[in-house]
Length: 259
Image (cartoon, rainbow, N blue to C red):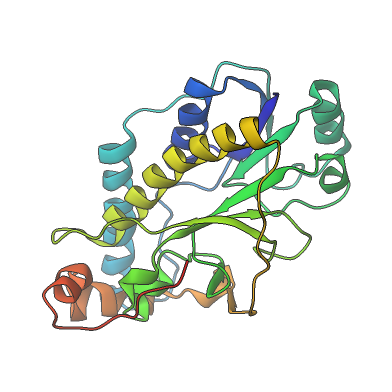
């Protein structure tokens, strides 16, 4: 069973690939060089929002270092790309040369033609968000902004041409603990999902298939442009990044998702 990976180069993406590689050695992979993990705040925003922006991404970097430590690209045939040439003829040629049975995707840009048609039927994406309620970008941030931390989870789904809209195989919601901040929950979601990815591959090896479930509603497709630094005021200035604590202490409520 040839397993192939397509993903980003941030610690969380490489952690996922390496966890799979330990149990199911990867036949190859395409690694997209992503944006800087510590982006600069936008110009012309007020000082409060600038401070929150810097704090937010520093805390994300600190959390990823804590949970994922130092991660390297798996030792297997690798094609390095960027967002602009991910879906290139070069990527297609690389995939066709390896002829994978399964492709596991996590952390790259949207797969489009001609790469889309070159991938096998059993190609699944790990989306950091509970589809269909949270689709698109920053979908582990928005559950906190809308004060429903119980919806901070992930979705394994079949890739289709529409963003995060494919049939669902499996969903993951990490256990919330009293000291969890927004980035702790995100990292735990990746860790739990990495472990479950291995179980999904074990299941496929036995059953030769996965069971797919159609998404029953459209949900909300968040764009990168939907996020503004001002949104961070609720996380850090109103709640001091203790939304999970307040939920577990019964001070705020959050519906339990059906996954």
